[in-house]
Length: 211
Image (cartoon, rainbow, N blue to C red; front, side, top):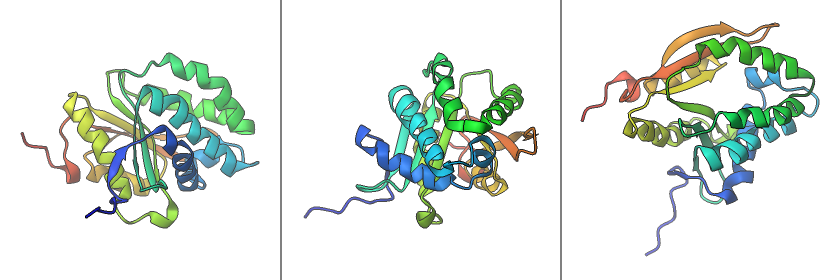
C-alpha cells in the first residue's frame, strides 16, 4: 500500500521548491524586526520575498545546503552556508541586495558593519535564513527543518552560528544547543540582535550529544 508522504518530514530542497520556499520565507519574515529595519517599507512583502529567493537561488541551492518541509507546497525552509561556500559570492550579490533594500540600504549596510566583529572567523555552518509559514507555526516544523543541518555540521566536526532579532527565538535556539555569543543594538534605532553559536555535538535542550 502506498503511504502518504509526511509533510513534516524534512528533505533536501530541489530546484522545483524555489518558488514555494521563497513564498514560505517571505510570509515568515513579513514583520520580522530585522527585515523591517533593513528593507524598504515600499513594497515590503515583495522585497522580502526577493531577498529570500536570492538566498535560496543564488546561495543555498548552488553553494550551501537547504532543507524544506512540506509535500508539494513548502511549509518551512532552512538555508545554510558552509565552509565550502565561496565568500566572494556575497560581494557579487551586493548590488542586488542594495536594490532590494531600497531606501533602507544604508541601514542594512550599517547593521552588517556592527555585526561583522561578532561573526566567527573559524569555519562554521552559518544559518542564512529559516522560517515557517505563519499558519503552520507551533507544529514543530522549525525544529524539524533545522535538525538536519545541525547533524550535518556535527558530522563535519564544525560549530554552527546564527543571528536573530527576535528575543523569543533566543529561547528556541537555546533548546537546539545554541548559546548567546553577543548582543548588539543595531544603529539608527534598529532592533537588538543576538549572535548565537552552537558547539559541535550540542544536543537539543542543551545536552551534550553522546557517541
